[in-house]
Image (cartoon, rainbow, N blue to C red; front, side, top):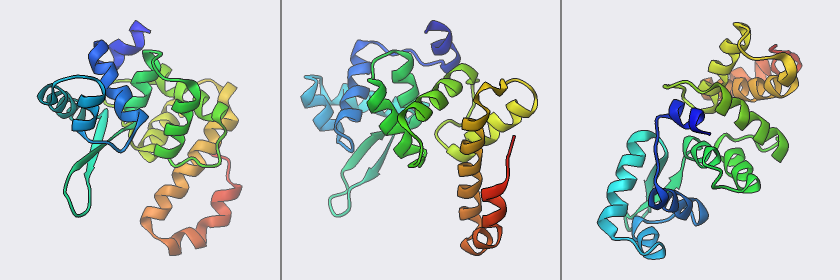
Length: 187
């Protein structure tokens, strides 16, 4: 575990873990609610959330109408909680499935993919973006840094990431290339 946490370069104490777990348990949520639920001072929680934002562990959106900041945990935050063994596998799989938009992946596939990320993480790896994460893993696979044991899972993940990328480019392109994407093996 310590090797993984050294690569993430994130050290969390018990109170910081409680903040992250408080967010993930009732997201989206406000800093005030996290502070009240964990019996912490609001300014401490707010400062920690700001530092978590800078580290890419959490993000927020403003509630329409009131403008309140509603926080949620990003994939990197979920992976950190997994590295600390502070999160149940079911909750981790559900959160990562939602964040990476991998609706057709089973819990086991999501957790295996998370372990691939955890074991191959290097500083600067964009784990909060599934398309960029797939690109990083794809280049590592082509360089021989990943074993072929997870070939089917990685191929499925690369296909979903490529579909997402094409979706960003345009729906017309996706319709023209759809059959080629569905039939292609990426590794």
